[in-house]
Length: 145
Picture (tube, rainbow, N blue to C red):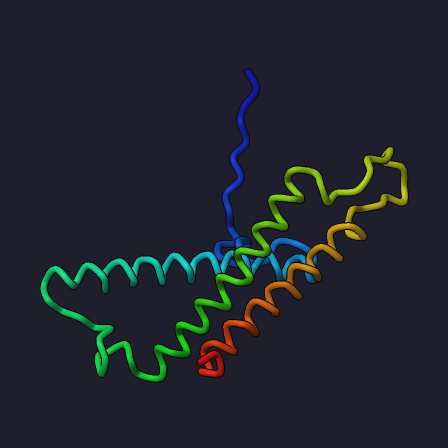
């Protein structure tokens, strides 16, 4: 029986964030993780604030704690995180299902990658997220009324 070699993660958080070449795909990877954590944090905070209704504490009523301008900016950041995370998640599902990886080719040097197919998809996702964000900004600025 062969001995199992164990490799410890000595990079810590940097290994989670870094760990590869720095291109637009790496930035999308990091942003996808950070927006996912931000949406999770928002969900937990929203659950706590909503559950305070049981104790007759209403933080979102007119003139309440959450009607300060900083929380309005926070709501906009949640919309921005949702826009990017949702559209990038759809892109990742398409890539995982094989719709955006290109034709399979024999691996002969110099190797060709699927970046030529995936990068335009990533840019299209960013444009869609930006359009979604602009619609959200239109609403947040009060122009929709």
